Image (tube, rainbow, N blue to C red):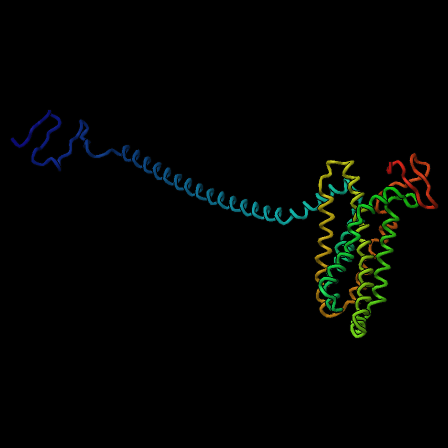
Length: 338
C-alpha cells in the first residue's frame, strides 16, 4: 500500500515524492541534468552574456553618435548664426557698391563727381549757410520781421529764374559749350558776392552801423542781401545745369530709374546737415566774418571740376545746321529756338 508502481522499472514512493528521483534504465536520475546538458546551459549563458555585452556596446555607441550629432548640429547652428551676422553687417556695403556700380554704368564718374561736389558744397554748403545765416545776422542788425521776409524773398529769387537760365544755356552756347561757361560765370558771380561780404562785414561793422542810425543799418543790410543773392544765383545755376544733363541721360536710358535723383538729394542733404551743425554755434558767438570765409571756400569748390569739363557735353560749332554766330564766342541755336 506504500508503493504504487507504474511499471516494474520506475517505482514511485507516494510518501516521499520530493526526495525520490526517477531513474532510467542506466540508473541515471531523470530529474538531475546530465553533464552535456550542463555544458549546453553554460554555453547558452555565455552567449547570453555576450549578447548582453554587445547590446551594451551598441547602446554606448548610439549614445556617442547622438552626442556627436548634437555637437555637429551645434557647430552648424553657430556657423549659420555667424554667417547670418556677417551678411547683415556686409549688406549696407554690398548694396552701396551695387548702387554705385549701376550709376557708373549709365553716368560717367566725372559727371557723378561734379554732381556730388555741386550738391554737397554749394546746395548743401554755401546756399544752406546763407539761408541759415540770414535770421541771426538780420536780428543782430535789428531788422524787423517784415523786412526780413522781403530780404529772404530777394535771396531766393534766383531759384525762380532757373527755367530761364536753363533755356538760355540751351539757346546760347558760349565758346561751343552749352553748360560749361554758364557754370563758370555763375561761380564767378558767387565768388564776387563772397568777396564783398568779406570786405563789407568786419567784426565791428554791425555795431558801427547801429550807432550811425537806421539808414546806415538798412544800407548795410541791402548790400549784404545783394551778396547773398549772388551766392544763391550760383547755386540755382549749377543746380539747373546739372539737372539738365542728367535729364538727357535719363531720356536716352529710360531704364536708369531714379537712382541719380536719390544721389543728388543725398549729397545735398549730407552737406546741409554738416553746415547746420556749425552755423548755429558760430552765429551765436558772433563769428559772422568766419562764416563768410567758409562760404567763400564752399563757393570755390566746383570751379576746378567745371573748368576741366566734368560736365559731359559735345562742343558745338557755327557750321552746324541751325547754328548762328552772334559775336566772338557766342552762338545762337535757331533750330532749338524754332
